[in-house]
Amino acid sequence: MPKPTTTTDPKVEPRPALEKRSRRTFSSDYKLSILQQADACQRGESGALLRREKLYSNQLSQWRREFAEHGVEGLKKSAPGPQARKTPEQKRIEQLEKENERLRKQIEVKDGCLMLQKKALSLLEALEADPS
Image 1 (tube, one colour):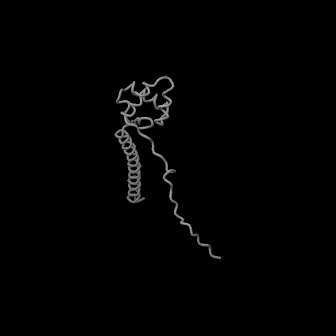
Image 2 (image 1 turned 90 degrees about the vertical axis):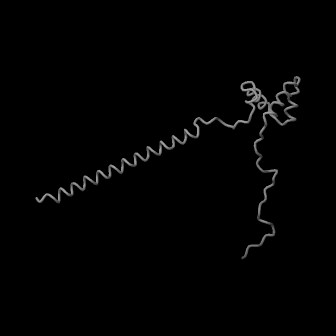
Image 3 (image 1 turned 30 degrees about the vertical axis):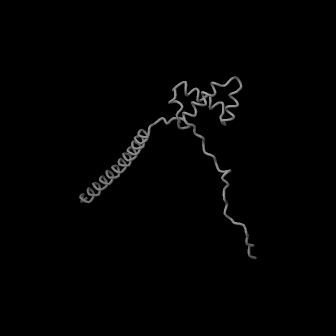
């Protein structure tokens, strides 16, 4: 029995509203202006500022901490997550050292095989040369 044909299009089109949103980024000028506005707020007004700008209080406290520690330079965009412990050059050096060690071991094995072949050949030659 044949399957019935469907009239709907089998292609699925994602809705843009449901697509994954990207992380928001803020310029250092924007962060500085928000900090100035937050400092100018009276008691209880900072919540309205945060709601209007769609920010969280922890963002504001982090920006304040960065500004206090490093000034305007601290407000510039930084990469999320922990800082890398090794530079790319150090990683490359480590990778090359591992490869070098692997190749050294490989050469040792090959040298051992050659030495074994030489000994076996000398034994065979000694047996052929010995007439008894």
